[in-house]
Image (cartoon, rainbow over the protein chains, first blue to last red):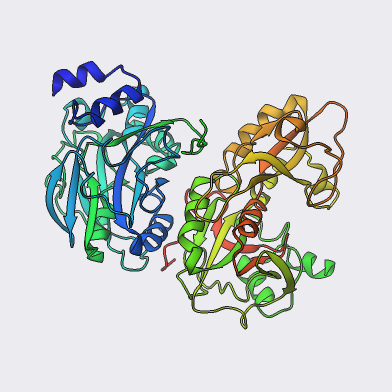
Length: 272
Length: 272
C-alpha cells in the first residue's frame, strides 16, 4: 500500500477518488489530496437523521457538519462533482446496535433507500496548517494514530444522541501554545480551537500514556498537553443511541472532497 | 417606543428579554444587547425539519443555523439559560401556505407539539464590527432598513426548499472594499464575506434604486455596491415549499441571545 500512497500523493483529487472507487487503493488518506477538505463519514437511517443533525448543530466542535446527502441518494453533491459515498471511501466500518460487525471496501450492497450520509470535518486540515507553521506533531512525524481519550466533558444531547466528548491530544512546546490555538481556531470545520489546554486530569483523563483510542504519544519536557474535540465523539453518541445500523469510514480512511481547505463554506454549487 | 429603546439600550440581555416577554417592549432590536448574538427566527413543523436543516447546511451564507429547538419544546437551551421562543421575540409573523396572515407579539396559542424553532445568524453582528472600524453604512446612519434584492444566484435545493438567493446591499468607498470583505468574513454566523462586489446587473439586479424588500439607499460617487447573502432567503424558500404553517420573527424584531458575538461556536452548555 505504501507504494500506492506515494504514487497517489500528487495526483488530483478526482484521480485519487477514481483509484479508490475502482478498488485500486484501499488504504489511509493522510497526506493525500493536499489542500482539499477530508471528512469523517457517518451513515444513518432517516428515522434518526433530524436528531443527528441537531446533535451536530449543538456540538459543532466534535461534529462539524460539512455535507449531508439527500435521503437514499448516495451522491454527495455539495462536496464534489461526482462523489458516490458507496464506493469513494477506501474502507468502511459497519455497526449494528453500536457493535462493530466488520469492515468493507464498498457498501453498494448495504446502502438502502432510507439512508443519509453525513460528512464531518476532520483534524487533517489543521494538522497540515500546523506543519506549514513549523510546529512538529509527534504522531504525524512518527506515522502513528493521534491519541484519543474519553473526557469528562458532556456533549449537548439531541434525541437519543448523548455522551461524553472524545478528545485528541497533541503535545506542544509551551512557547508555541498560543500560536497553535490561533492556527486551529482558523479552522472551525476541522474542530477549531482546543477544548482544553494543560492538566489532563481537569477533563477526566487519569493516564495520558493510556489513550482510549489511537496510539500513545510522549509528552516531552517543556511541552504542554493540548486537547481538541474529536470526530470519534459522534460514534460514541451513536453507540449510546443504540441505532440499529450505522456505517462509518474506517478510521484514517477518509472521504476526500473537491472542496478547497481554505474555502469559506464547504459547499460547491451543484453546477461547479 | 423610542423611549423604551433608549431605556433598554444598556440593560443586560436577560433584562431586555424580560421586558419583551412581559410585553413591555415590542419594538425592533437593532442596537440592543451590545456584544450578544441576535438571530432570525423560523418555526416549522417537524415534517419538514430535516429538509430545512439540510437546506441551511447547504446554504450556510444566507442560512447560518445558530440554534435548533427540540421538537415541541419552545426553550432554546443552547442559546441561553431561559429563552422561551413563544414569548421572547418582540413580534412574530405568521404565514399559511406562504402567505402572511398577520403579526402578533406572542405565539403561545399557536405553538404546537410538532413545531421546531430554528435560529439563524443575522447581519447586525458584522454591521456593528463595521461601525467599530469606522466604516459608515448608510441605512444604519439613517435608521432605515437595509435594501434587499432577489438575485439571480441559485440556492442549493433540499427537499421542497429551493429558490434564488436574496441579497442585502451596502455601498462602501472603493478604498475600503477589501477591509469590509475581511471584517465580514470573520463572522461566518452572520452571513460572512459578500457574495458579490460590483455591478448589480451581474447578479440579476436591474435597478439598484428599487429594492424588493427594505428601503432604497444611495450609492454615492466613489462607492462600490457590495452584496451579502440575506436572511430573507429562507423565507423565499419556505414560500416556494408551500409549507402549511410557518412562524418567523417580524423583520428587525430579532431574538437576542446570551451567546457573545465573538464566541467561537453559538452554543452555551445547558448548565451555563
